[in-house]
Length: 120
Image (cartoon, rainbow, N blue to C red; front, side):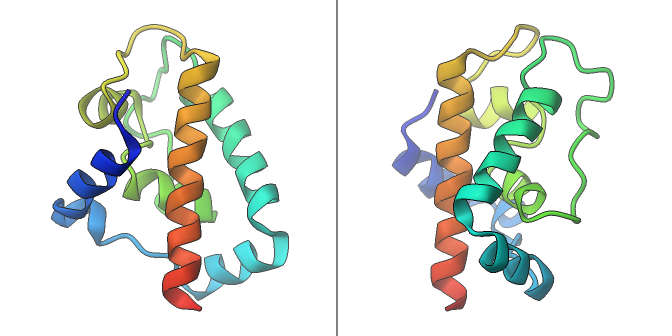
């Protein structure tokens, strides 16, 4: 796994990753539900869509919209196992460990919190 500060520096240099921002609907959802609840949702998404060793639709399992976590996943390269390997140094083709899942939640929470600060 990568140092989170280093990760965010590298992500900021990616034109693709840095174009993602929460739109009004997602910001409103995040404010209404609160960051802890949205992070609970993220934990569920990670457990079901990223943690298994084999994912049939890897690379297509994370929508680009519909939940603030989906946007955060694309912005932070936590969207598929290929991106986890490339950006986070987490090998694919094996189950994510609890520490790796926790790390991903920390990454997503930081990005979501940064978005809230950027907008308000």
